[in-house]
Image (cartoon, rainbow, N blue to C red; front, side):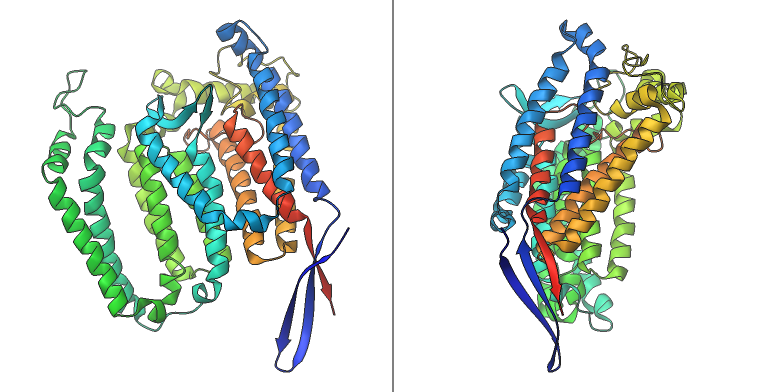
Length: 481
């Protein structure tokens, strides 16, 4: 059953040029649904073959992980089907609530989260663990899409000549300095305690705590730092308002500033976990949507450069991340310091060759590669199915992104188009980064392979996002002359 949803009429002077009808399809986009099913089936096979040795050793049940994974897949498919029936306009109405809820979860995990391997990223609800950063990925996408759609005209306006030096630079210098001082006062003690691993002057191993001076400084001058920071932020806002930044520099005020505030707010909470991989993915997704949405390229280049420097600094500040950088350079010489996993991953890939050793025949999953059904499941795939199998999976992800772009171009409005592009970019980025980690092209960052890595809540959230794309795919554009 088809029906007209909306009409848009474009005119040039007095002449009407083209009319677009948005019609409801009979069903969802079948090629996209097919690639989702293929990825899920491939993921089931890989979790089964990668996990049975580890499951038997740890739980005495070789089918422990695959049974749970099948349950999560079944629940996820039901959620995907249900979400695909929900009109995407309804999701848009709940965008602010979803984003605020996700942001609050990131706050909650800092105080009530479960600690694993030096990172606090999960909230346990009974037997199920939830990673708030996974929900935030979707929340950030729909929030950016909604904002870009509402303020697209202002985002694409050009600022007045000289507006950067007269308005933007002084205001941002005050705001950034103020935000930095406020953060030191409010969270500095917690941050430096995480960096040091202790708030005591002498660490457990008997060495001196190099961050102890920063910890005491932030604790003693907490109120002064917070007040000074707030005053500087207030001055920056006052200067922006007085110089009429919205009209004088709309390309910055509408096209850069809101996204920057979002990135900084989310990144600050993820840095405290710490969760560098989540920070990188969410930042890249927002930057992609900004680029598509028409944000000023000159400001974007500056922001990307500043963000890259900041990210490099964070990676080198946290021992949790800095250690991974050291290991990445030479995992075989740092086997006891964290190089064991990437080294075993490279052995697995090399052992697979062109055709692989055969399904179930991997040697590295025999407790050489820790938890092989998680972040490094692609290494087991390469070992058992070889270069041919790996390339087949890569092509599935490439087709997934390609079909997502097709759906986005046919979407009924800018919001729905940006949502599809954002989710497609998220899956594509995660797959690419995971494969780069597994091949030791980049440092280990704890990124799961979508549809493949074992996981409950993350898989169900991913399939809910697939439901959103399928819902949007029900709408197509028919052009009339």
